[in-house]
Amino acid sequence: MEQHYYVVNILVSDRENAYNSVNELLHQFAKLIKLRIGYPVDEEGFAIVFVVVKATNDEMGSFSGRLGKIKGVKVKSILVK
Image 1 (cartoon, rainbow, N blue to C red):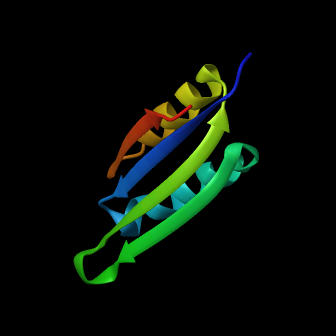
Image 2: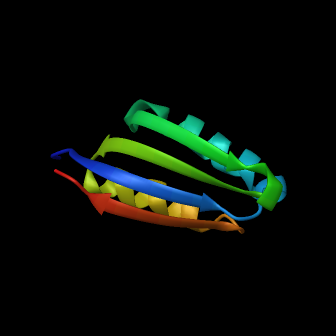
């Protein structure tokens, strides 16, 4: 299958309970991740993670779907190329 680039924006609104799950999932999909930038906002208890992924549609669907199932996480992915 053909791979595409995606930009994935992840908002972790419950850092205390969700951050470890998000990091574990990012580790599981590490072979697809080309860039990862995290910005923790400690004083407000949330974090923003920006990821660039090169994946097939199926891989991207699995990745974003599993992220979206984590309580306290919102995910938005955009097809780039």
